[in-house]
Amino acid sequence: MKETELVIGIDPGLASTGWGIVERSGSRLVYRAHGVVSTSARAPHQERLLAIFREITAVIEEWRPLGAGMETLYFAKNVSSAMGVAEARGVVTLALALKGIELSEYTPHGIKQAVVGVARAEKNQVQQAVKLLLGLPEIPKPDHAADALAAAITRLHTARLAI
Image 1 (tube, rainbow, N blue to C red):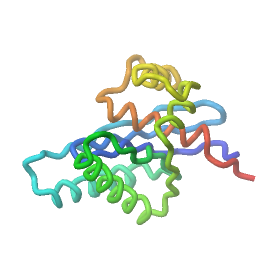
Image 2 (cartoon, one colour):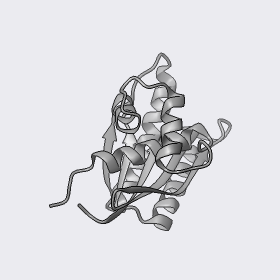
Image 3 (tube, helix red, strand yellow):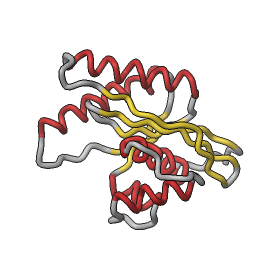
C-alpha cells in the first residue's frame, strides 16, 4: 500500500458538479479541498458541459490526484435530468482520462457502505460520517461537495492494494 495517496471524488450533475480532494496518509484520511462547479439553466447546453469540463480540469491540474471516485448513474423518475447527469459524467470522465487518472465508480449503496458502514444509510448520516472521518468542524457545504468527498473516501477505502 502506498504511504500517501491523493484522490478526487466527483458528484456529477449538469446544474451542480461537486468535487472533493482527500489524501490518505498512512491510515489517516486528510481533507484537502472541496467545491462545486455550477452552471446556469439559461446557458446553452454545450456551454454548460464545457464549463464543467474546464473547471474540473483546472481542479485536476491544481491538485494532481492519483485516482478518482464517482457515483454510478442511477435513474430516478425524471429521465431528462438523468440525461444531464450522464452528460456531466461523460465530460468529467473525459477530463480524468486526458490526465491519465484512474476512475473507480461506485453505486450509491456502495458509497454509503464504505463511508457509514450501512448500505441504506440516510443522506444526513453520510454527511455526518464525512465530517467525522475528515475531522471537519462542520458538514461540508453544499451537499454536492459533501457527496464528492464521500466518493473520494470510498475510493481510498476500496482501492486495490498496491503490491
